[in-house]
Amino acid sequence: MNPEPHRFHVAIASRFENIELVQVVLQDTLEGLGVGEDDRHWVDLAVREAVANAIRHGNQQDPTKRVDVDFELSGGALVIRVKDEGPGFSPEEVADPLAEENLLRSNGRGLLYMRSCMDTIDWAPHPDGGTEVTLRKRLPALGAGTRAQEE
Image (cartoon, rainbow, N blue to C red):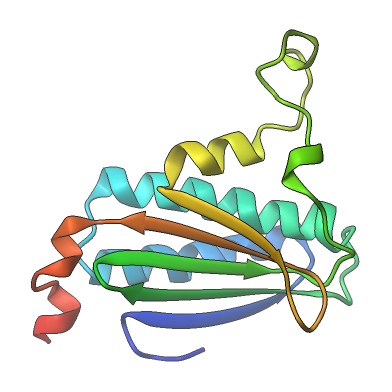
């Protein structure tokens, strides 16, 4: 893990209990940057969903496969990349959780949550295999003097 307050990398085995490690590092980083509680909550929710999807759907819960999470502050925006080692997927093929036939399903809302919490989300096959999800959230207060930049 890189100790810079505006950038980190965490690699975890595909186990759901490891999501908490990512959350602790993420929350500590966001607090250090002076991100407000509401924004921290929404970023946290989106990243939790992205990591859970990487574990469940990307890596098929295979604990020998990794999920890599990279965080950086770039031009007043948080950029978070979550990469799995799975076969990949197409977001267009995921059923609409708001369609009447899907309203009572117990799963399938992760992409909806991520889209609701972040400004942009992109999916792409990674050159080394797997899928990389890039989450972006513009936080105007980060463009001008954050606590991390002042230290």
